[in-house]
Image (cartoon, rainbow, N blue to C red):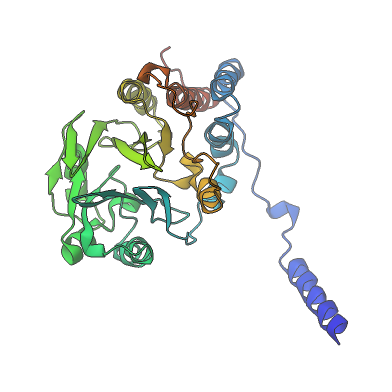
Length: 341
């Protein structure tokens, strides 16, 4: 009887697979770049690969290759699916989803949320539901930082303001855009200037305006600890490659600008506002299975235990930003756009 049930189940699965089979004629065409400057794209691609090394290879593969040559697959990797809310550092939690990330930072004066997802439904039933699952009182979330003025990042802010009294934090440019946007239209609360420091409880955050992906993109340096050891995390405002030459140039300038801040701060943790940008889905699973002797998978610089490392020695995040620049140059060359050196 059991074998009969198994055979029946397998036959049904096979029949279902056959019934949805797609003729090759209906496959989307391969991504091509008919106007590509192959010499320039090859130069930039190989430079990006060298900068990535082995430790940053997944970031290179996503931004330089998958995002550009296989955009359908890249989009599928950001489909809507829930993620278990997870504590990844002593004071940092993931409360987003597969399609859009949201991060929560603990301070002794309340919690700071980074991004609010698309709308009120997601803000309540993904972000705040995740906060509750972590055993945190939603009323202890005091602020919400907006990394850039696209609806999937600020769409839930107005709901959180009205429902929980959360105060929004953004760049002046982003506030101006959100005030006229089609999504939510949050109330302006706190504006942090370019390069400004902002202290909540015992933590001091730094914010840098990094236009390119959007005019008001807001990149952050976030202090965190892991098993009591201090680290600095960087959350770039928006890595999506712009379409125009002017905005590509802006993005490259912003990468250089933010790089100076992160180098001085000794950043050793990559965070992203989409999980493909920081490989957080993989790292979250590693955190869940982390043994006592294992390093935190989010930390990209791993000096010897007890070693004193000068901030200038923190090079991995600098290579990460330089790699991002080369991926922009790959995209430009594939579209026969000329960027200044």
